[in-house]
Image (cartoon, rainbow, N blue to C red):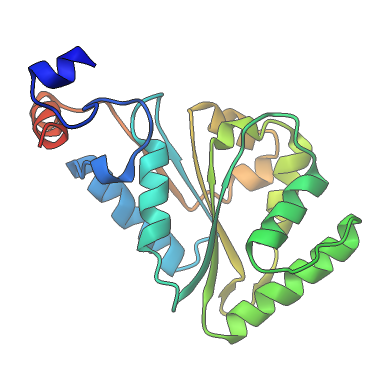
Length: 208
């Protein structure tokens, strides 16, 4: 592209792809990551991060996944690409991502497999954390009920799994489809537009 040569740039400085090498640790992104990491380490159950398009949610989700040490966490990240997924698809994908080698097709067996896997993770001294990006696509009561059911899996000292939702503000409306689940939100953080100071620092960061 001619402007790359003109400005002596090696690559597009403002690509809309969420590239981790361009991650900008603004004050609010740093605070959000710290709070979400705390939610994971203390196994809070359900945390949500909300932001409008372009606020860095996906990049932050990947940053969080990379920041969870493999020695301490069994962590996975799911990206929801459409709103037509079924509860069975969701459960099978979560089970597979957490290490269930051959998830069954029927719901009760999947839940049994997943529960046993979560117990194994707990007994190994690790924490199971599932990050879900584009979580606003989870838009049915049936899906919300599945998350509530999974959050009921616990041992005397803590929950066996923590979910971290990243998505647009519609997440909150979807969670209210199942009021008991909405009441279980342990951490909520909303990304705001960058301040003028952070915007200047962001531009400088991307042009390095």
